Structures are given as C-alpha cells and as structure tokens.
Length: 187
Ligand code: IMP
Image (cartoon, rainbow, N blue to C red; front, side):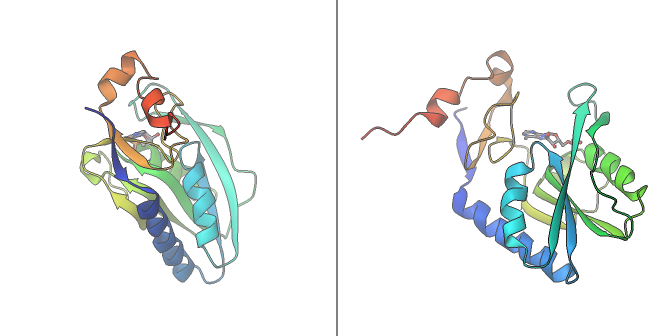
C-alpha cells in the first residue's frame, strides 16, 4: 500500500482552529496546555496560536517499556506547579487509551483544579481503557498514520500532512517512504 494523504494542511488547520476555539470557550480565565513529547509538538505549536485566552505551556516526556505494552514511565516531568490550575493534556493520538490514562493519573495527583483531554487524533475503536476525550481534531478508523508530529522510529514527524501507510514493511525498512515523501518536486 502506497502512502496516501488522510488529512491535508488545510484540513489540519481547520481542525486546530476549531479545537483552539473550543478550549478558549471553556477556559475564559486561561489554561495550561501540557503536551506530551514528542508527537504532539507540531499540534501544540499550532494550537497555542489558535487559543485566544491566556495560555501557558509545559511538557511531559514518556518512554514505553516495550512497544504496544502500554506500560509507560515519565522521563521528563513538568517544570511548573499545576495545583489549582485548569489543565488540558495535549496528545497526538489516543489509541488504546493506556498512555492517556497513565498521564491523567499522574496529573491528577498534582491536584490541578481540573484536567481535560485534547487529542489531534482519536482512534476510539482500539480503546482498552475508556478515556473521556474533551477535544478531538479527527476520529480515525484502523489506519496507521504518520506526519504532523507522528513518527515511525523518529521518521516522518516533519510531514506537513497526515498520511496513512502500511506499518508492516516499515518494520524492515523505516526509511522506506522517505525518498518519495520528501523528494523535491521537479518541474
Ligand atoms: P495508547 O493510546 O496508549 O495506545 O498510545 C498512544 C501512543 O501510541 C501515541 O502517543 C503514539 O505515540 C502511538 N501511536 C498510536 N497509533 C499510532 C499511529 O497510527 N502512528 C504513530 N504513532 C501511533
């Protein structure tokens, strides 16, 4: 299966603007966006500019014990104190829900006023644990996706669009689609 565009730049921009206005509407007093490194960095960068209430940002970085194990540990914690604050957790994709559930537990233990969940992509049909997603850019079916922050072994994050690919051949050659996706257009 050749890579195919699932959401182009215009669709992503419209979704980000919509989500930004939903977050603004719900947080007139301001909001702290907590983004999960590295996949949600592109989304966060665009989202903060689509929010028109006072906004601050902080970051968490996680590492998985094994791919798809759902077991996660925090390798970079928040810099600031979130006690009493309105927080929105910003994810690239909520899939099984295991990561978001772990991170929500971590954040809630720090006694914020409230934590809501925002994800660019929501693949609800793969859920193992339920997650209340408050803000979502797009719903996904089964497609494996790359681009706009989402990677395969650190590749493809810098695509300006979200594509679907068959992940199986990528396991043997992570660079498989790099040439065709990033090749400069020739006249
Ligand atoms: P989960 O909700 O705990 O299953 O995991 C979500 C994480 O899995 C995301 O933050 C991504 O890092 C990764 N992930 C899940 N689906 C995809 C995909 O289609 N492409 C790239 N990464 C994915």
